[in-house]
Image (cartoon, rainbow, N blue to C red; front, side, top):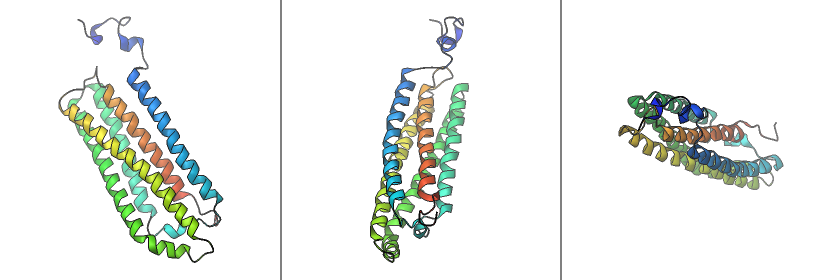
Length: 220
């Protein structure tokens, strides 16, 4: 049987389908769309509490959540998206070593991000008592602080689970890549894991913006 590459243009599935539509890609897009709705629900809840609070006092959290740390986490995740794009490009070209190398770097970026998030969570938990004391200096300040804890752990934790799943997913694809499973004619799994990883990165950019960069409503 002739390979797809050897078929005439009018018989080649790749030529007939320039968008490279596959059921696997459709399933991934549907999954990401449903997952996005979950994040939208959590983000919507956060925004309602945040905007409705007269005393969110985001500045009081600066000692525990310095912008430099979270900005570096964001940079690492964005960089991992770049390496993911490069891994997919290598797969399209049939570059076996390139696929393994760039997928490996993407995994390293995800692991670094998770390590920094664990550090941030640990710092927050140990600093919670001091931060609560800061909030108690204002009238009825306990509620905003409790709301922040709930929304912060819910949003970053839900995203952290996705990053963890992504690292495991990438590791499985990386292992198969080391076995030479992907070629220029058959690299759909690399593309699909890339879609998932880019989604995770995009969600973090949104979370970074609303959790760390939005001004305190009192001062804004």
